[in-house]
Image (cartoon, rainbow, N blue to C red; front, side, top):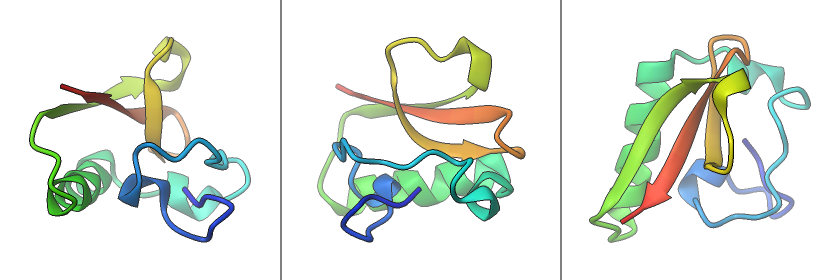
Length: 82
């Protein structure tokens, strides 16, 4: 997902200006496991040690921070620090 800065939101999990997968459908087509692994690697590379990424059905997302979308937008990858 791209932010208004042109960076991928999964490279910056604190990005508050992330666009949704409807605007960038190619990003939603990635495999969930592959995208989750990319996001995890990027977060770890930034020095974050304690965090959780979870793949959830799009309609099950509540207050979690969404950092990725996959399986044609039917699932989201959520991020929780700590």
